[in-house]
Length: 136
Image 1 (cartoon, rainbow, N blue to C red):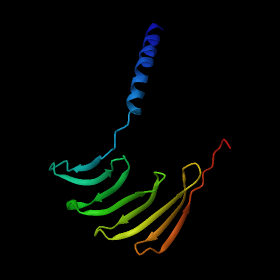
Image 2 (cartoon, rainbow, N blue to C red):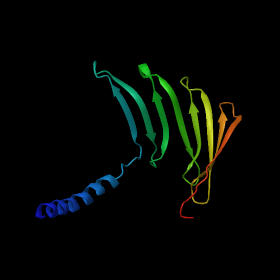
Image 3 (cartoon, helix red, strand yellow):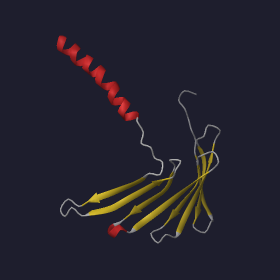
């Protein structure tokens, strides 16, 4: 019984410290995150993904790479006065505009509508976000 109490007491001391580490966020201001794949046989590194943040810590670009470090696609993010993503521009492997997503938000700051356009600006689809709470 004493061992169980000792273990429980130790866990109570350790768990808050672990939670404090998990809550700590990375400062994303002017941050660039590069993701690399390494071949287990040859140890050759290949760039897989790059995410870029601006001086405000907002994601402004993502690039996905394929073999030979060639771009598969690229996304640029534009923000409105409210600080939320207003447009997402998607480019293909040739850096040609492939599509645009425009967003509207509800009074709680959640996505309300997503308008999807092709690279020439023609509306293709509209996505509506519905939030349903079990507590309502």
